[in-house]
Image 1 (tube, helix red, strand yellow):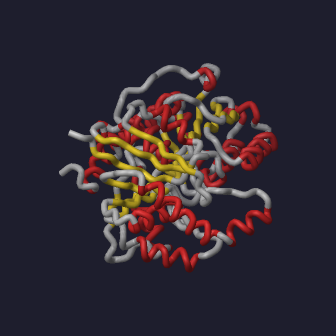
Image 2: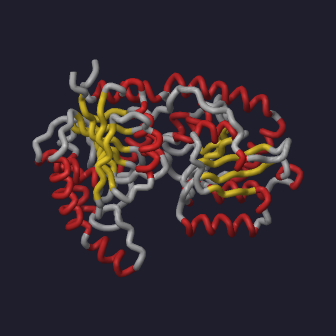
Image 3: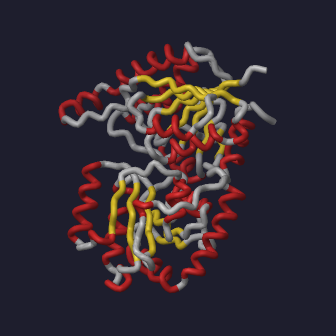
Amino acid sequence: MKKKTISIIIENLLYGGTTSHLINFINSKACRKYNFKIITNKSNAGIKDIKESCKSNKFEIIDFNSLNALQPKIFLLKVIFFATKPLLFLFSIIQMFFILKKISSDVTLLNCGGYGDFRTEMAGAIALKLLKRKNFYLLIHHCYSKPILWGGIINLINKYISKIFRMIFFVSKATKDSISKNTSLIDKNSKYKIIYNGVPVRPFSLKRIKKLKVKKGVNKIGMLSRIEDYKGHLNLIYSFSKLTDKEKKQFKVFFIGNGNPIFIKKINNMISLKNLNKYFQIINYLKIDSYTILNNFDITVSLTKDFEGFGYSVAESLFVKTPVISTNVGGLKEILNDKVANIVKPNDNIGVVKSLRDFLLRKNKWKIKAKLGRKRIIEYFNSEKMSNEFLKNFRLIK
C-alpha cells in the first residue's frame, strides 16, 4: 500500500519552537507510515537541524528563495521593501502556485510561526485554492504581529483565506485569543482547534557536557532559547546582580542560543557593566540533544516579557526533571502552575532574586516540583498525543 504524503509549508525555520514542533511531529511513532515534503525558504538556518534530527528517509525538503523573508539592512532598501510588499506577495502566490502544482499531497499543513504580515503561508493558501486543492490546514504558533504597513489589505486577505482552510490550529489558547482579538482570520463561524505542542517521551543521555562544566558546589542556571530582547536575558542579569557575593558564587549562568548580534553585544556590555563576567557565559549553539543540555542545568529560567506561544524549553526542562523559574505569559500559563514551577510576573526582578535564594535554601522542594512537572508534561504535552490529534483532524486516522 502506497504511503500517504503530508506536505508542510513553513517560511521560517529558525532554531526555535516551529523547528522543534516539526521535528517532533515527523519523528513521532504516529507519523512513521507517512511521507513528508517540507517546502521552506532556502536561507533557513533550521534546514540543517531538520536533516540531522529526522533520521528516516521519509521526508524531502523543497527549498525556494522567499522574497517575503528578505531583511534589507540599508534604510532606503527597507523603505522600498515595505512599500512594495503587496507586489512581492503577489509574486509569492505565483511562485507557490508553480511549486505546489508539481507536488502531490494528501494533506498540506501551512505551519506559521508568527502571524500578521504578508507571509509565504498566506500565499500558499491562495495558491492551493487556485489549484483546487481541498485538504489543507493552517497552524499558528505565536501571537499576532502588527504589520508596519498595509494593515487594511492584510485584513482583507485574512477574511478571504479564513474561509478556505479546512481547519485552523493553534498551539495554545493564548495564541488563539491573540489572533482572534487582533485579526479578521477567525470569527464565530470559523473552524479552529487548539492542539498543544508536545515533547517526545523518550530516553536521553545523562552525560556531562564539557562546555557546561563548573566547580563543585556551583549550581548551573540555564536559558536555552533564541537570544532576543523579549526573552528576558537582561532581566536575569539585573536580578543576578542583586544577589550577595556569597550567593553569586553558588551559581553560573549559561545563555545558549542564536540571536541578534546587536542584542548579544548589549547583553555582554551589561554583564561587564555589572562586573559579572565570571558568572555568565554565552554559547552560540550546542550540537547536542536539548534534553541532555537541560538535564545539565540545575535550574532552567524563562523570563519572556510579553508573549510565548508555547514554551518548548520549559516543557522539555520539566520532562527531564530540571526545576523551572518562569514568567506566566501567553501559552506558558497553560503549561505551568505553582505546583510544578516557580512562577514570577514579567519584569519582576525581585521575584527572580527571591526564587534563586529559595532554591539555595530548599532544593528538595524544587526537585519535588520538577518531578510533578514531568508527570504533567507526559500526560498533557507529549508529542504522540499531539501527532495523533493532527492526524485525526487531517482525517488520516479515526
